[in-house]
Amino acid sequence: MTTLGLDESVEILARHRDDRSHTGISDAADHSRQFALYFDAAGTEFVACGGIEREPSSKVGGQKLQL
Image (cartoon, rainbow, N blue to C red; front, top):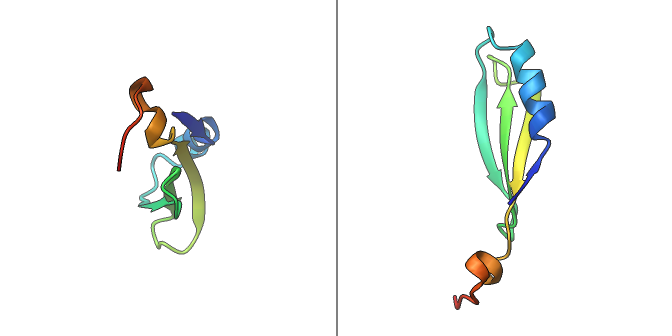
């Protein structure tokens, strides 16, 4: 699993730690990536985003998986 933008998101959120925020999660259509989205208290301004890139399911644990 690889992180995407995590360091930057943590840095941005640390500057806004006293502010309330809304969060959301979005998956890529092929489920290869998942992102956490952070918005301001009103939910109108995008503040930060961090994500993960998943390994293909056929590579998990070195075993070939059947779906």
